[in-house]
Length: 376
Ligand code: PLP
Image (cartoon, rainbow, N blue to C red; front, side, top):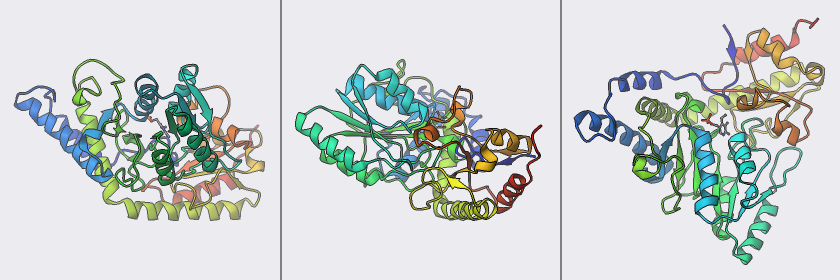
């Protein structure tokens, strides 16, 4: 039996999602068909869309189902450049590759400017505000893309401030909200932005389903072209079973938002204390040990005597612990984490929590770290 501490990579399916998906398997109609079986499937898709929109304080038409977070992020950036006349993109080198690799692909089509950050991974929003203000004077349309919570170090960005500075200077705002959606209360009415992204498997829903939030009137064009599904915004027959699972997982997460946040904060606080006690030389990467500046799901640590040699995460795997050295999506790539490299950290282990994580699992991890067998 493994101990799963990699919930920022993905989470186990919750019973609510599983039950809703099994029930949805019976809905074989195509949601675009106008007959009775088609209408049943369509009703489910629209019910989930309405529930999500109600929780986010936005319009149902602003929620467009996608294959997940990557598609939603890619769509926002590419469409802004190709169809919305964006000429300047403010981005961060600490973003998930769903953003950084799309920025690389767009370079040459517009001016891409990296927002400065310090060794803790805090972005300089005063610098950004001054830059946006200068752009507003030159009437060049800008897009800011900054993730709400970093998936490797948990750093939170002040979304309300980003929203108000982009409104004030006529810029567009995209935030990769994959790590915070259904974990933090998001209100797109109170904190307006043009684009956000959701991935169901980050909150106990199924993989391969999510949605793009796109503010009405933004004027984007479809990323995937074909049929008229999703009101003409995203072609392809809807993933009805996935949408059922997404909806159930989202509703369950939103219903227990405060209790789950309190639980994970307790688990994280416990882990910080236990690790500090066991390893006085420990450093925490980014703001991950600062409860006010990071998301409660993520903790990223470096212990010189354990990490030297670069085998710790492998050793933990052998002991039955699922942890991560960086983003799961880059684990097959050459080189270490671009986020840890970006903040000049020598390395790290990310442990990440869910409402299912227990204090006993943290005790087991600390015990295993203290008793690692020597490598030959
Ligand atoms: N953005 C962030 C911050 C993520 O953590 C992830 C998943 O690891 C993604 C985007 C990609 O989401 P998906 O796996 O649904 O494509």
